[in-house]
Amino acid sequence: MIEVTNEAAERIRALLSEEGKLESHGLRLKVIGGGCSGLQYQLSFDDVVREIDSEIEVEGVKVIIDEKSALYLVGSRVDFVDTLEESGFKIKNPNASNTCGCGQSFAA
Image (cartoon, rainbow, N blue to C red; front, side, top):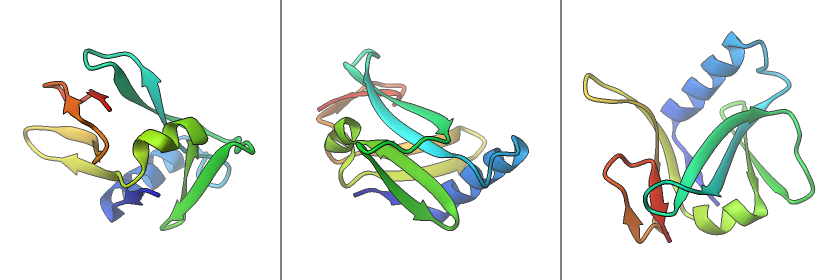
C-alpha cells in the first residue's frame, strides 16, 4: 500500500519513545480536506486500530491508515528529512495531481 523509509521509521520510533508510547501507539496517516490545494496530510499518534483501518509495521513501528485515506495514499512513500533547509516528514504521493508550494497540501 505505502512505503515507509528507514529514516521515517526511526523518527517515528524516537518520537513514540519520547512520549512513552512506543509499545501502545502507532502513527496514523490521514488525508483530510483543507489546505490551498484541497487535501492535506494529517499525522498523529493513535492507539486504536478500527475495522476500517489498515495497519503496516516497519522496523517495529506501526503505521495506521483508514480506508478513505488509503484511496489517496496508494503507492505513496513516507520519508523523514533533516537538513539545513528543511526538517520533517515528507510524503511522495503518485496520486497527487497538484501540490502547493509548501508541500503540505495536494489535489488528486
